[in-house]
Structures are given as structure tokens and as C-alpha cells.
Image (cartoon, rainbow, N blue to C red; front, top):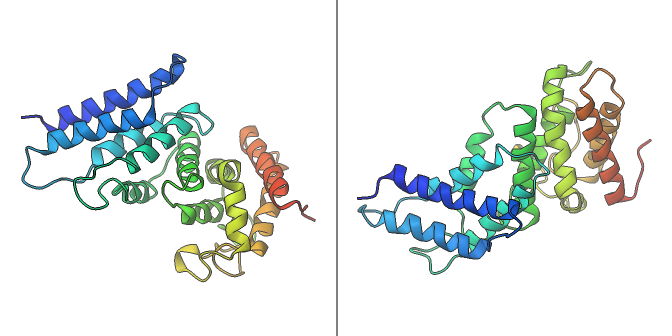
Length: 254
């Protein structure tokens, strides 16, 4: 009998080999890799009475994301792998692979944690990339990132520098990898009025994506880009986010 630990290790080894193949200049096919991973999982699952949810697959992928930087090639390659898993056929039961369950649930659980700035930016970059690639929709996470970095805090004053140094890069990567998507959502007023898309203390406007809120985010990035008391990488990412937003909407903040 194959243990869950053995199965998890086999899946992890396949994912690591896939990642390493790009470092070696070979670049394994994400479709064939997805087939190998899903076959490994289903073969092990035959020993049980009920087909389990494939937590081990998505946990292993996300654990690799957490050790990368937001701009790592590994990010793109793992997004392609998740997309290939989604398209894997046949499915052992309806929507087993096509729903990517429980990846969305797992990411939501992770969002309750507290992470170093680099890891937090990497996780946000991953879900932003998945959203843009139409692999899995995490557009609400974009609002949460902006709210945490740009809208939260006292009416007078700002969040602590430690919090800003953690949250601003995570918000910035949404612009880097999903800026056009977020602007499109803003023009369509997506998630309007939804409680999950509410504003932080500094945003008193309409909930959800909208153009006035987008402009507010731009002004906030602009302000943080000029701060001398924040880490240089934080202000650099704020500046790049501002530039990215201006390229997307072709406007300037006043």
C-alpha cells in the first residue's frame, strides 16, 4: 500500500524535476507533467474507499511558489502546470480536475497567515497570474491586497513602516502581473457593493472595483514612492506600480 507521505513525495519530486528542467534549458511539457502528477495521485487513491481531494498536489505547488520571488520564471511555469492540471482528462468524477478544488480554498486559508514581504509578494503574484491566465479567479484577492497596503490605517497617519514594507510589494505585484485586468474590472465596476470588496478606513467610496478607487490607489502608490523612511525596495515597487497603472489607463495623478 502506498502511504500518503510516499504519494506526496512522489508528486513533489515530479514538480521539482519540472522546475529544474527549465533551469537546465530543457523545459518539460506542462501537459505531460500534469498527466504524471494526476496519475500518481489517482493510482495511490485506489487504495481508499472514497476518492480524496487532491490537496497534496496543490500544497506541493504552492510550497514551491513560497520559496520563489515574484518575478521568478518558476512562477510562470507553475501557472502553466496548474492550467494543464485543470485540463487533464478524463476526470475520475465531474469537475475533479477542471474546478481545481481545493486550490482556491487552500489559498484562502493561507491568506489568514502572516508572511515575510518577499514570500507575501510571491503568493500574491501567483494568484494574480492565475487570474490573468483564466486558470482560476482570484480577483477579490487583488482588492484585498490594495486595501491592506493602500486603504487601511488611521484616518490621520499611516500604518507602521513594518506593515507597509510587507504590504506594499504585495499590492504592487498585482499591477505588475494583472494591471490591465484590474483596470478592466474597474471600468466594469466588478464586485460592486460586495462586502468582501469593501474599502479600508481611508477609502470612503463605493465598494468593489471602480475608476475612482483605481485613481485613489494610484495616488497612494505615488505617495509611498516618495517616502524616505520605507525600505528602498518598497518605494521602488510603489513607483513601478504607479508607472504601470499610468501605462494602463493613460492618465496621470494630480
